[in-house]
Length: 231
Ligand code: PGA
Image (tube, rainbow, N blue to C red):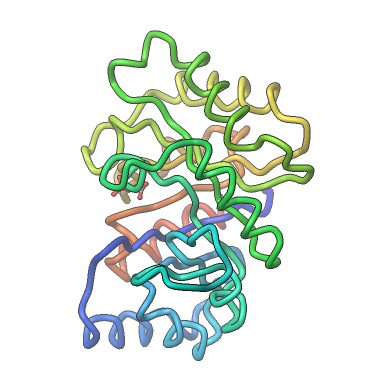
């Protein structure tokens, strides 16, 4: 059994009272390898309860007139240790490109935040998946001289309840490992739930998981964590 990482990406979900109940259910559990990425305004509540926290995005500047954005310096100053960067929803809704993602990764590293870089192909790119992923890796990790966490998330598997076969995931993970200079941890993300985690968790090349929607449901998320930690 290796020390797998489990990231919960809560996205733009949950209201304050739900967050309080959620934290109550999690706060006394052993969550050493779990990183919760709530909507940014809720981050301090998690930190105050000693839960590892990541931020869902950072801006690529330190500070200034950038209304609505949050910098890595700021996140780091309240104790955030991880940042999701380049999530496919940011690429899609905010038109984020690899070049910007590369700047954000550098900004995170400069501020002692561990980047969680998301990469993945969309449905049309499936035939050329390896070419697509190589380009994303080369561009996003350009001039970055250390390992970062990689989350492989096929875009067609995010929020769709469709997951690739174990063979598909394994093949891609081995390919990504081959392409990287460092011994990065590589996670899988996309429609993970309590029904499929036992199967996906059998892929021994994986270093963990990024769980989206289901991470907002405390009991189900705790069940997933248990499967991953104990198997
Ligand atoms: P999902 O999201 O688990 O809801 O598919 C995954 C993600 O946030 O990337």
